[in-house]
Image 1 (cartoon, rainbow, N blue to C red):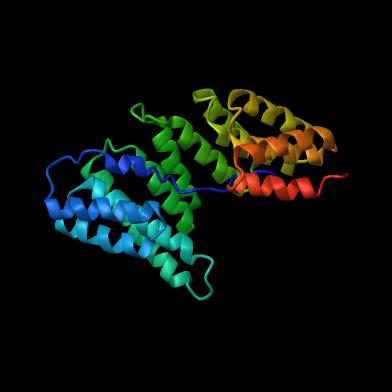
Image 2: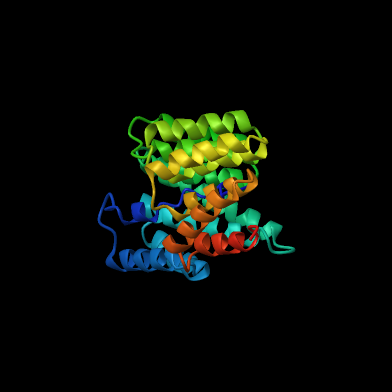
Length: 263
């Protein structure tokens, strides 16, 4: 695939900073804040430790439970590539699912948790259950970011090689927010995998026109142009990606791709 459009956990850590429904003990709030910081910075084990303590101190706080669920999901995701860790990963997925379901029980209007629950269900192997939760999030009229739910549905179908439904959901995401880069990447992935490279180029060009400073879109467009044999145009876009993101993943990938271009 030309772009990184894997299924991703709907980790909106900013939402974890939302005010709690009721005042929690100060120690619990401190542990929660510390756990969120660890989670943001990739220290998953430390995040789990702090968030478990916060949730124990205030087991009826849905924000604490969401945070703990995200930490369990991050741990499960990290374990899935480790040999002999399948059982441990499955246990963390179960814990994540339980946390998200409890958070929704405590606050049915916490719509973003449907995205988190969906991601955890898919991670655990329950793909149909996960897609059902993404659809529930997308259909909820109070959802502030339906484009993310639609994008995640598209990514789930893309993983299943159901390209028609994937493209349909990615387009639905774009209809909600044309400035959101991920659906352009998703559509392009589906089109390239289906052998429709020229259509992928056109889609990515539309994405770059809408979000010209996004290095991932520039990288994907450069890669698609390379596949189409349009090497001069590919070089221009890849060099743009390097300039926009010199030390980041898109810039580094673009620099590597430039080495493969004909002189």
